[in-house]
Image (cartoon, rainbow, N blue to C red; front, top):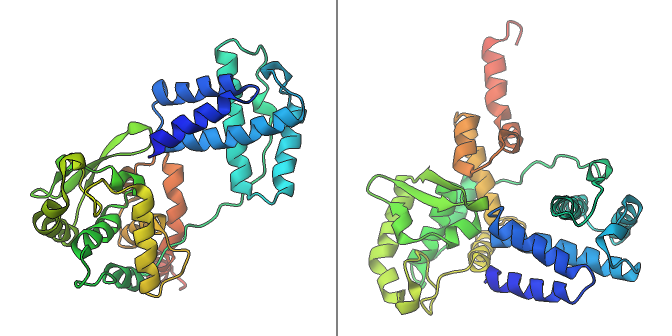
Length: 312
């Protein structure tokens, strides 16, 4: 679905001043940089909003984009009560567009280094206790027609920490349940191998043997997770299923697929896993991204302090 949305976004961009340059930039991100459709689509949305603003300011050429114009646009976003993270993301998209323009000779100056965005507080990830996760995993009812599939979805999300898009894109050929691992493609088409625990393996094997053959049709291809019609589940459908069972389990309404990813990392670190291993399983390029989870290890730190400090 995201590829169709990306094509639609590109068509809408072309109708705007500077739209052709932005479309070329998005094509570059897809073809040359190898970014995922979802990432490129997010850049496209942010840049489309910026182009609408440029049009209102009678800016129709890349050479007319100056630091003052961009700062005014960020102020407009601030007055519209956009979050700091959204404003920062928009600024990143504009910076990358201008660097692309410099790289391709469309502009002569590169002033992106002097652009300042909002200073973000580092937000700690939302996660649940182990008991809350167990309640979520037990939320599907065996009486429901898609119980085996939904149970496998929840177990795999918690067992591996994969993103919704990564889970939706899994194929049966990506699984090696005899050994106990799966291969998935993350952001930038980077492949990683993640171990899968016995409980998630058992749920997945039962789904593969009992329900998936009944759902599979010619259009199903090799995709692991299928809908009632036999089509591959989308990441939005995975997201909706998690929200449905979170509500049923009486968990916080802001619980999402990404919360389970946070729980995966949090509970591993609490159990004593090293940060580097968690980084590899999450697919983070920079370990600094993974370090945000170190806040969850406070109980273990307190135990260590109490045991080894000379004056506890």
